[in-house]
Amino acid sequence: MAIESYFKRMGLSSKWKIFCHTYRNHYYFAQAMVDRFALFVELQHRYKVRISGNDELIKVLKNEQKGAILAGAHVGNMEMAGYFFDHQEKDFHGIVFGEEAKFLTGQRVNALSKRKVKMIPITSDMSHLFMLHQALEQGDCLTLHCDRSLLGRKQMEVMFLGAPALFPTGAFQLALRMDVPVLAIYMMREKSKRYHIIIRNLTQLIPREGTDAEKLRAYMHQFVTMLEEVLQRYPEQWYNYYDFWKKAS
Image (cartoon, helix red, strand yellow):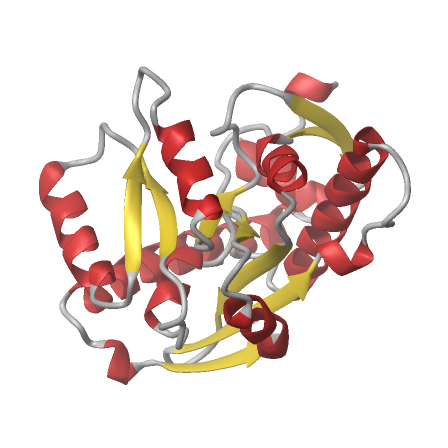
């Protein structure tokens, strides 16, 4: 089972401990789905949120001339962050898969649009790539999951939890091409309907000198390093239910 492989890489060896962590993982995933539906019907007042690194986001939002990429992963509940940011300066654009149920997509679009969050559907003709470029050109923000391929199929092998894994490079290549900053962002569930949003400006950690290839590798390293740090604090909130390391082995 893929989730068992993940917990072994997190240092668990006891079958009982792996079972308990797997149970909590499924519980947190179910809670994440319930919380999303709660926000669809505007019940965000029931949740409490604390933000670490909010100053970095504010700096980006105040720059009217330049957009930004918010890089997340299938960890925690990133989509909910759009309901709690005070980001009237810019629109946020997220990705939605075309095969999702129309009812759910409609509810999501309606709820998020009130928070200046717009959805870009993935299309077979790749026209969504033009929309992503356009959003950055007009100074808006893109929210992208950077642990699965969305922007093309280019990947890079990076050490992750002690073993090589493949991560897509599309979001970071786009940032370099468009000269926009990248903020890593995770929204992690805590007890009693509390969430912790963690933000880090990855661009500030990238050397200004060097080739684009060197900067891309630095981006990948910083992103994966932060992902590992977040998982060490919230190990049960990893939602990639397949063998993440298999193709790199």
